[in-house]
Length: 277
Image 1 (cartoon, one colour):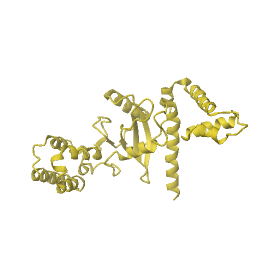
Image 2: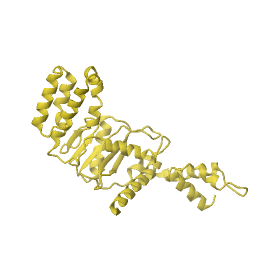
Image 3: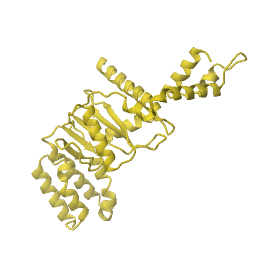
Image 4: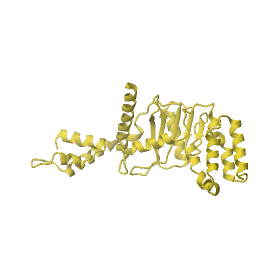
């Protein structure tokens, strides 16, 4: 294989285009290489790149600064090690989702999260975000205002309140209004109390638990903290969908680093386009 063909194989791989298409493009009587040659070249390239170790290549990848508000989600697993993919996402000045960091975790244990956020702080020179929106209650950054994902909480209502949620459309409307349209803490508390009494939910333990942590998910309690108008981790979800076009279940850690770089470049291109417009 010529250097030009090898470069083309590498470029196709970086862009997520099937490697076999290279040989197809140059098919002919005088062709001197096959699909197998293309795959062998990538295998040799991976072996050369992995001399320093697959995980070390990820740890050595440099970080950049991030914003004041981040969303954090670990629900996406799409690499050959089935490792939770944890993106740190924020908004730029065009309200576009921006991937500032990501992590691949061995598991979702408390020890792994402690390692993750300690490593995050070191990379950020001990600079903590103002606020963080997460999918579950993870105690990180003591001086940062935490917010539970409103979407994750809302999707549990049909299950936890099935006896009334599916049978009474008025209840759903009043519940949504109480949560989203209460502009003050006092207004929320009054609306919540009226809702509980009107529908006979005084002894519902799940609602009592939700009310006890209301400061972490009710918008009215967040008025004094900058959250960039975000209440959910849907920005992280959109980043997951975005990344799906770059990586798949066969992606190794070394390849992930390369394709992560491609994804970030794509993000930057979108921001530059918005700046120009």
